[in-house]
Length: 326
Image 1 (cartoon, rainbow, N blue to C red):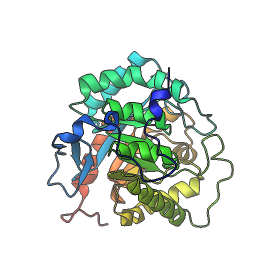
Image 2 (image 1 turned 180 degrees about the vertical axis):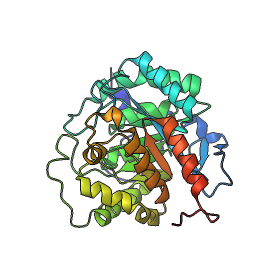
Image 3 (image 1 turned 90 degrees about the vertical axis):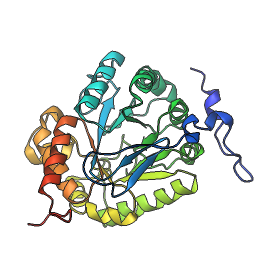
Image 4 (image 1 turned 90 degrees about the horizontal axis):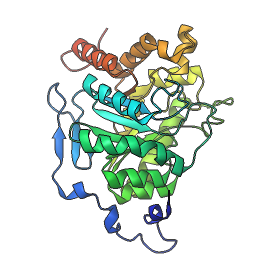
């Protein structure tokens, strides 16, 4: 695939950035936002995603679609495009508010692939979903490559999820050029080495400070909506992960929607003694429920139906002021 056309959004070395080229201007930007209100109560706040918006009156569910041969969570079951499309539509039917498509594995120990290979995997799934399901969902692409982000945004994707925390200024500029939204996840190092003896003096404070700094950089690049994610399992030990989940409410001080991704992760297996990621549903449900009590706005999950039911139970158990008391 010829990638030359994907470089047009790069910022020149000198002077102020030019206005986005015509191909960077979202067709949807001229249209009024279509608000997709969640079914539980009045909106406390709104997540603005280009031509659509989502109410955060109740927590949102982001369903994961891994288009990879080596995902930790499903072992490449949806690497085939047709299988991935079928899986994506099943997640929508189960109640996913957002679909997050990823074509590069970021499991511990994984190596990077090229942007060309990532697009080769992604586009046969992304294009049909945008055409046939775009009206009933928000599509997100999980990528750290500016070229992939630009191709996705040009097609109408509303959200870019970067597990590397938008450290790449070119990626920030691409997303900002489309006035799109970004999910910034914290990760120490790279997937290939992130679990090699990760250390923190104050894991909650350090992760929070990093996310605050990256959110500011994102806003300065023109990114209109920033979601933050503490990055459970990405450069953290078991105790680091537990500390972040226990103190998730601290991240709400940053004034950004908070996403929690614990689904099927290794720390659940460490605690429960379950080595197979596919068998970690009970631990995932408990961790998600705890995260909801601590203030998570979005749950990123593989098992959407279970997450939808978890949200309903937690919301029903909240007190009259929306708080849990024991």
